[in-house]
Length: 293
Ligand code: UTP
View (cartoon, rainbow, N blue to C red):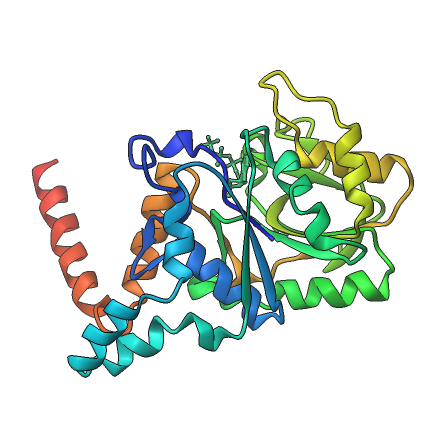
């Protein structure tokens, strides 16, 4: 499932009437990268948990006969191929989170969809790896089965002085590429942080998570936090396992402007057609800037 129901207040006014998940990074909306990543990792059914003002996400993945006809008449085969989401062989489903009561509550909206099966949660505002070329979810699925886990979380090393911006995991003993988690700490001060490994926007859960979410009390802002539900799993002694992202699987979190700007520029620089020209333009801008400072 892909939760996309959040308000995106940190990206206002850009997100006043459009979902942050539809903001472009280079040529594509962010959520398209997320979908492509999931499909290339073997996910075939995708549930979007949406909210008000989010219909453009449904429209994006829907068939548009008029546009197809226009592009076909103009012999724009490349674009037609790029917009053919049916070729992705994934089925899309949509449900609404009626009130934005936090990520935990958004995950709860997937309960009847998931049924008795384990399921992936991929945050709609985070891309893994340049152009979403990450195999992390497939590795996580293998670990989920091999370790008979209740939950597998992707984690990423962050600079130790930045732990206060992330949910940080406490390894049970040692932190290799795959390790058991003893506990989670939300946004710890660097002096109290149990590690510098941050939760990175991809999870696999067994359906037991739904009971945990129901037990979580809302925080000060009235939100049900998913990390609190995972913490309950840890407290119950269930297997909660971390899979470390590799160097090529950097997490691009576009939920705030500094990170969104940087992500856009990095992806635009890597664009096969326009990257080189953009690099020259950027260098000119930087030189002009340096001259006027
Ligand atoms: P964030 O934690 O970034 O929250 O959500 P947000 O509300 O979108 O953004 P800010 O803090 O107001 O700027 C992480 C992911 O979880 C989804 C968001 O859409 C995003 O993809 N989410 C969050 C929901 O689906 N429902 C919620 O109630 C909260």
